[in-house]
Length: 145
Image 1: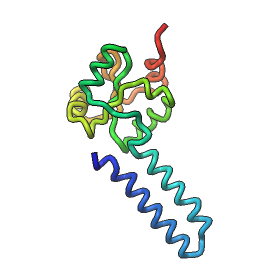
Image 2: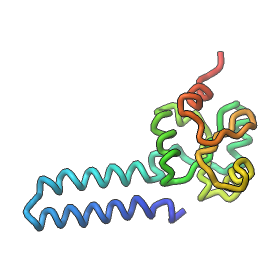
Image 3: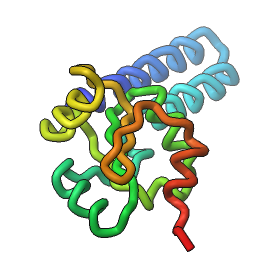
Image 4: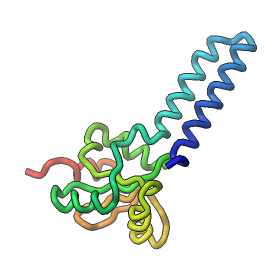
């Protein structure tokens, strides 16, 4: 769990150091631009932008009941961030599994990807899809009529 916060923490520390340096050099305006930029990048790379993760077994059980996709992801993955941002509010309809927090989730991803932990891996109706198009995932999230 701790490694999920390494990159965001480093970004906040580096941004703070750069902003402090700019203030000490007499450039407070530059510091006022750089610090929020570093904080925004840290926020996007943190687990906070993702819906609450559950275990792989629970996600698969819920998916069987409600038919919603299971998204296997890990913090810091730019493709996972892209998927999460492009799904918008609809992301909460999927079942999210952080493979760094759930060994069973990591094993499921390795089984679907020839031993590699390639994420995002989205499982729809029992079939894994590695790094699928966000528009396609959005379609899978819409309620069927």
